[in-house]
Image (tube, rainbow, N blue to C red; front, side, top):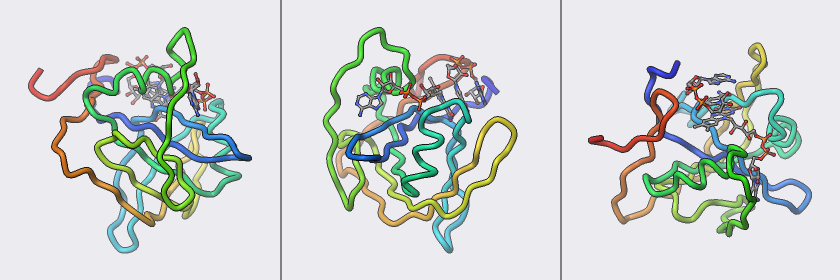
Length: 146
Ligand code: FAD
Ligand code: NAD
C-alpha cells in the first residue's frame, strides 16, 4: 500500500467540550448525490469510538507545509503542542488547511480491524489562495514535483 500515493488529512471532531484530531490518509470521495465521503479509522484509535459517539467529523486536507501537524495528530511528536482551531457550524477546523470538508456520519461499516465511516457532506470550505498538498508515498512525506 506504500506504493499508492495519497494526500494527507486530519480528521477532527468535538467531544464533551474537547477537540480531537487524527491523521488519516485512508480517505476518498464516494458519491455526488448525495455528497458522500469515506474515512477508514482503525479500531485501536481513540478517534474510532469518538466519531461513533459524536456522529460528525470534518476532514482537513493538509498543505505541503503542514507536515508537523500530520505528525502531531499521528502521535509521532515527542511533545504535545497546542493547536488553535477555527469553529464553523459546530466543527473544529484547521484554518490553514487546503480545504475543510464538514460531515455528519451517514453510515458506518466495520471492515476487519477498521471501520469505514461514510460522511454526508454538509459544508465545504476552500481557500482562495493557492497551495500545494502534503503527499504521503512509501512511508514518507513528499510534495508535487519532488
Ligand atoms: P491519539 O493518540 O489520541 O491522538 C493522536 C495525537 O493527536 C496525540 O499525540 C495528540 O497529541 C494529538 N491531538 C489530538 N487532539 C489534539 C488537540 N485538540 N490539540 C493538539 N493535539 C491533539 N490511522 C487510521 O486509522 N486511518 C488512517 O487513514 C490513517 N492514516 C494515517 C496516515 C499517516 C500519514 C499517518 C502518519 C498515520 C495514519 N494513521 C491512520 C494512524 C493514526 O494517525 C494514529 O494511529 C493515531 O495516533 C491514532 O489516533 P488516536 O485517535 O488513537 O490518536
Ligand atoms: P507505511 O509505509 O507502513 O504505510 C503505507 C500504507 O500502508 C499507508 O498509506 C496505508 O495505506 C497502509 N497502512 C499502513 N498501516 C496501516 C494500518 N495499520 N491499517 C491499514 N492500512 C495501513 O507508513 P508508516 O510510515 O509506517 O505509517 C505510520 C503509522 O501510521 C503506522 O503506525 C501505520 O500503521 C499508521 N497508518 C495507518 C493507516 C491506516 O490505519 N489506514 C494508514 C497509514 C498509516
